[in-house]
Length: 184
Image 1: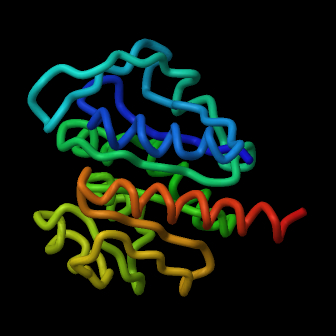
Image 2 (image 1 turned 30 degrees about the vertical axis):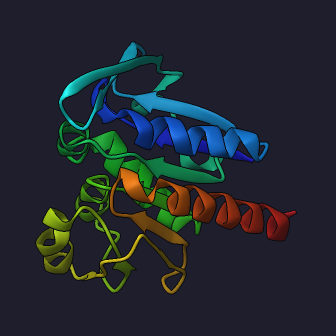
Image 3 (image 1 turned 45 degrees about the vertical axis):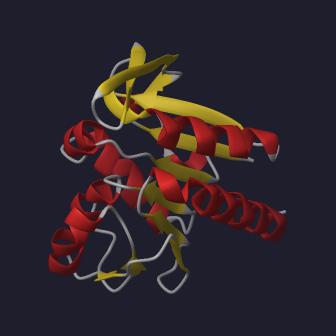
C-alpha cells in the first residue's frame, strides 16, 4: 500500500498531516509527502502556532497518481488556500479520481477538490466555512465527522476538523485496505 500526501511547504495543520500518516504506516502503508519544493514542510497548530518541521519526500511536479494507491490532502487554512492554486496538485487529485483511487481530504483540504473539479454530484464534508464553495461546485455538504462517498467512480473520504481525526484515519485505512485487497 502506498499513500501520497499533498501539502505546501508552509501552513499545513500538524495533526492533520501527522496522524493520518501514522495511521497508514501502522497499517503497513508507505507514505510519501509531496510539496511544491523538496524542502522542509513547516506545520502549524490551530493555524497559528509553529508546529513540527517535516521533510518533503518529493516535489508535486515529480509524482504521478499511478505510483500510489490513495491520496490524502491535509488541511490548514494557509496550506489549503495555496495548494488549491497549484497546477500539479489539481492535476494529481483529478488523476486519482479518474483512476478510481481513493481521495481523502480534511478540514480546509477539500478546497483542492473543489478547484480540482472532482466534487460535482458527490457528498462530502469539510470545515464549515467551505460549505458554500462545495455546494457552488455541485457537491452536497454534510455536517458529519467523516463522509465516505463511493458513488462517483472513486472513494471520496472527507472530514471536518482535527477533532474528527480518529474517524477520518479509520475511514482512510479501511478504504485503502479494501481497495488493495480487491486489486490483488
